[in-house]
Length: 137
Image 1: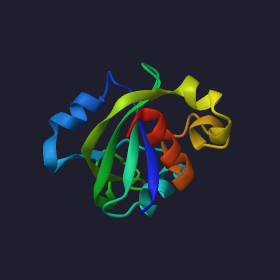
Image 2: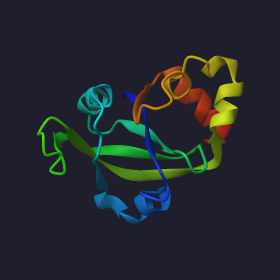
Image 3: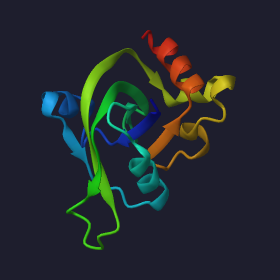
Image 4: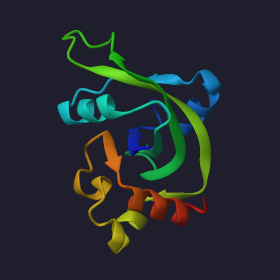
């Protein structure tokens, strides 16, 4: 299983919104970056991703699961981009802030630190395990 991190501004789509979507989950649309698109295309059913609140909060707050792989995003008029569907798995017992990630030497190469603007990012197994430990999972 691969691991990922997906970002959303809480005022647009928050962890609470994701939880409210229930088991049917919801699509992750609006990605317009080619590298982020490639990350979405690499996702498989059952992969897990950290749910990160960007701009407001700047913290990893939960874990979501891929329930539908890459398919066309109808909001993209160019037809170049797509989306996947996620469902909420669980909130983190303790959110992990961007400041904490940056202050942890073992996470210095994490995409959240090195490619901060990218909305869909890969997470290594080691990074996943460490962030989960920091969060009390």
